[in-house]
Image 1 (cartoon, rainbow, N blue to C red):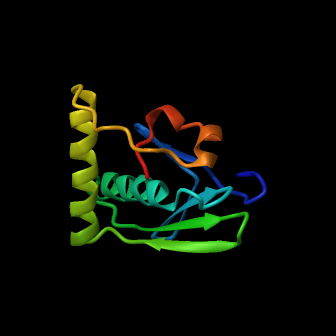
Image 2 (image 1 turned 120 degrees about the horizontal axis):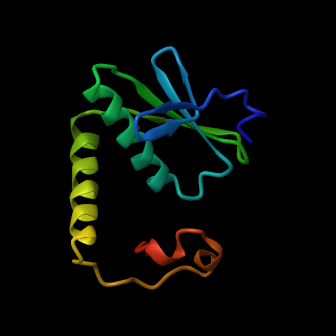
Amino acid sequence: MHKEQNSKEYIFEKIKVDDIQGDQLIEYKKTSSNLEGTKFQVLYYLDFFESKGLHLTGLVKDLTYKQEHFIKLDDETRLQLKSVLDSLQKMLKGILPEKLKLKKNCKKCSFFDYCWVE
């Protein structure tokens, strides 16, 4: 998939990004069926780069549906990211939320054991 897009795949410390073009970080996805999760993945990357002094915007390219989703780290999305990271810290400390009923197609998902989406 990445070869077809001629992406570069850059590795920075603890993360691997598909491509950076100008001031835009690009993440290629086979499908955007989990757009919310991908959004936070890209926000995390943008926050990481911002902490290093590099201000980027994000672009998610859905290769199946030929859609593009723009992601920007601003005050609102920064708060959302902080909330998600705080929740993850609680989970890592053993305070797990009650598991919600999963969708039918969730059983085939590689994140099935870690997911709490409705």
